Amino acid sequence: MKKRHQQKLIILSLMLFLVWNVPLVLIFDHSGEIFGFPIIYFFIFLIWILAILISFFILRRYYE
Image (cartoon, rainbow, N blue to C red; front, side, top):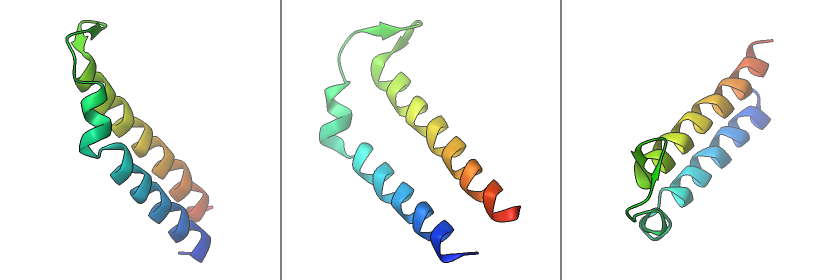
């Protein structure tokens, strides 16, 4: 794996660590709903899906 792809994945991991840190997650912990789901669940799964997609595009470029 090229160094730049490794660096991108490390940056992605650090950003996920910061986004899923307790103070930031607690901002979304209130009684509202989006599409019938509590906001905190929606936030967590949205960030999770975005992280999977970003890592997919990074790794897809690696295999080209």
